[in-house]
Length: 128
Image 1 (cartoon, one colour):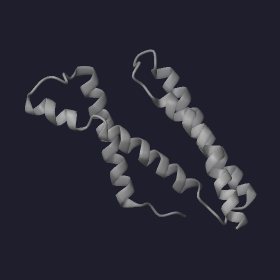
Image 2 (cartoon, helix red, strand yellow):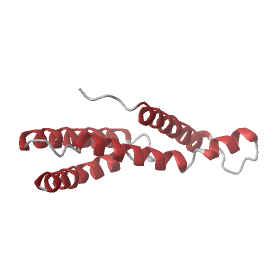
Image 3 (cartoon, helix red, strand yellow):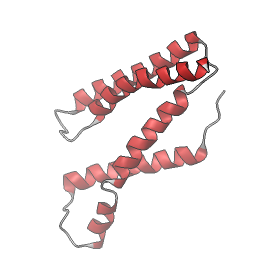
Image 4 (tube, helix red, strand yellow):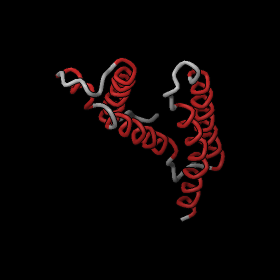
């Protein structure tokens, strides 16, 4: 059984919280408001999105990097990533009519492509 990485989990929670703040601010905020609350909310714009994407990629990399994995294990890992990508893609398409700023379908599509590259790299490293 794998152990959790507390710092990684904390960073991921902070990025998710930041994404809620960003979406709230985009919907209800005013980027030209000079109030302290508006300036605080604007701190999350851009930073949280980048952190969220980077941490998502790191999570997939940590999940799939197993140089000692057998071909069956590689297929199982690939299936896990592909299932997650289809879930995100489908969820993003469902949410899109209500929230046109949604990017889950992009995450799903990019994760689908990443599944092939991540596992191809693992196969090459296992051969070394």
